[in-house]
Image (cartoon, rainbow, N blue to C red; front, side, top):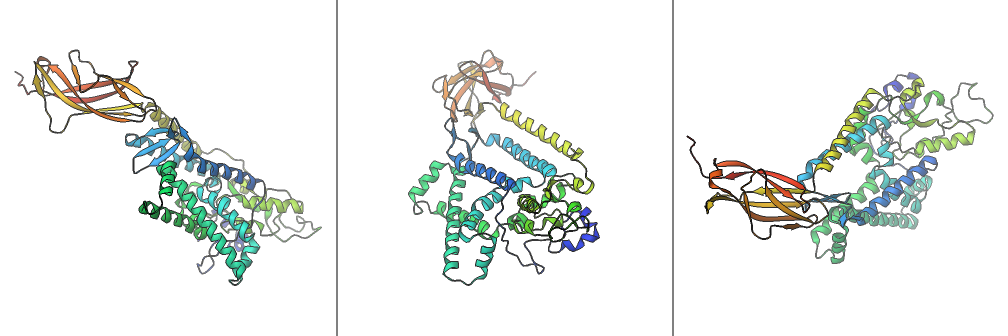
Length: 480
């Protein structure tokens, strides 16, 4: 399995550095467990701040409401969707679908320009793994060397105690994450209600929670980095998105080779040695177990742990930082500056157009949706010289404000509407209301068995909120 860039492969003098290119697998195809060292440094601090902010949002947003509506809710079962506190309905599903497409293109654009920065900084898998479960593991079992020692030793009291404690804490965290995930589907009130009622009254919901919690536990306790290297399709997609002008975490081979161990008082340039002292620190901190010096690899999630580890070593030995850094392949190979390529410009243009179109649809979707449907099997009836049709109306208030509605037939001076109740219809915020009306015309105005009819719905200020076009039925007349 060859994952290095073509330009790097073209240097035969570096071929011996490409062994074991898959960090989590040995030569027989068996998985190698990764024991990353606890990272520290500038980029690690930035990633921690980002993770803490995103975790705070994940655990806090279910309790945030806007005008009484959840800030985010995706209740597929009850077909209730709220984004930024605004209700969305099945009629607005095309807007959500377009938003999903826009998000995918946005991630693709970022991949074209910045590589897998999403994976290392924003992906929920990385955030939960590195900022929650891995930190618990460091707290209970210690850093890399202690974890490796614990794994090799017999199942004595120390190992049993630490493993059981870790597994228990992992299980508790998995249950907590599952319950918060369900809050984005059913709302926190419903989740708390189910917890209070207990599993006896909600056996299916309880089994569903156990299944999801078990999945989270399996992913973060055992599957781990293999989600990124084997399961996630985005990791495979990046191979066709990045090129030599994509910003990624790169090892500067021109500066680092020929790599050699550090010797005090040695003039490395004079003896033809590069700045890489082959300390392996960039390898031991990698959460996917790769050697970044082998070139860009699909397993690299751009977490920057290797940058911090290398900079720390360079500082200690008195060499310039940045041997491993954010750069482009063209910059490393040819010392070219970053440039905005035609592909990046085209992708950016498509993204801007999609975002603009999405914003227009959300703005123009209206605050009310009205429908006037004839009951199945119904027809016209004649009374007092007028032909009448019955319609079932359905009003959907997409706003959070109460509305008082008035119905009018457009472009028809002699139309008359008969209400089964008050002519003023009050509709609460986020409410669906149904009712019946009769619309009639003088007999001499109905010249066809089916005539087009436009019905408008107005608010209390006389503003037209929605229009619905339907058909008015009358008697069949033979035109002479």
